[in-house]
Image (cartoon, rainbow, N blue to C red; front, side, top):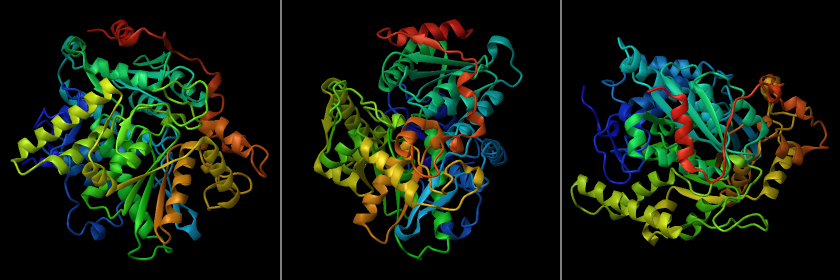
Length: 536
């Protein structure tokens, strides 16, 4: 079978051409430090809006993934089996149900937290875990002992990636998983979800520092030739292309859910609003839009760690202290907010968008290989400035190209609290009693990350009346008790116990296993932990 350009991959830094899907999934990060992207973005097939209209989530996932994964790599029946097993763990038959939050404003909420860890990252990481297993079983057929291919999966988490990765990989043969989280900077429930998993192949590392410190350690290990020589390293963060691919499905699925609803007016524009930290979730929507999904615009919703919002407003991508009056925030540091999964100084996946912007504006009229190389060189220069100077600026043409598809909003902690409270007191969408997102009054309860998205959505609605908005809800409110209680304590009909899923009851008192990584020891300390726990 022939392989299309969209089924071959290259690096955003300009090298690693012609790699297979299996190559990029198992490598995670390119040898030159770049991120993998498809050589071309495929278009949705002619007639997709009619043919796919009544497809299930799983059927849509298969059709979209087939555009990026050659059947010569993963036969169709095998891919369907991977997809079906991945989403059999979800609590909703729709996988990602769409809720009408405010009919008068045409505001809809996409509930992405119906997976086993109650966060949107389950959509990608249940799939990625089964994908790793599929490739390992195939590679290890008939092999024993040291001849077997062993994966060392390493990831950093600001909260939800860790538990979702662990639940996707726990108990998988020939895979060891090491998850780094910033000590004291994830919610108690998030920490408990990770550290109470006692499977022998799961290792939790508590790092003195920020999420960016954890992420830098992970990148350093992937960039170290010696470590890559000893271990087969694989990534679970959204730097892994398979995660972006898996997330494209819910943009298409929610679009169909919206246009099939009786309140939808044919032909009206649709916007997606995405709480954003590492830029992976909204990047999946950007790819869907480039493929032909009729989304008028994608709106980036950031918290007070606003590097993305500042870029879209100024064209400058700079590490600097967020706008805050806090006395504990140093220049170039991350501010702790009520939406901790978005407390990120530098958004890793932004590099992928930068490559496509550079290719579009600076590609020139040369042959395709030279255009790709030129884009990679430009991205390399920008990121070198980010590392050495703390930031870089793009030309007006590049910024305008970015604004064609995306715009941004910054939401403060106080605005987040106001949005949780206002939504609870004014939005009463029908839902199953077991959903855990309604108070006794019937009011809808948002988690703080989803509230950032809803706040940004309401601003976009004010600017664009008559436009349908789908705001992505990224986590269950029970994962962020402090913020929810801060907003709703004393409100009529609110009791936090009503929000708490049975899976969370007693979780924080269970036995834990965690390894401490002291401040200042760097990635070599993590290397020693890997050495001590993986036999080679």
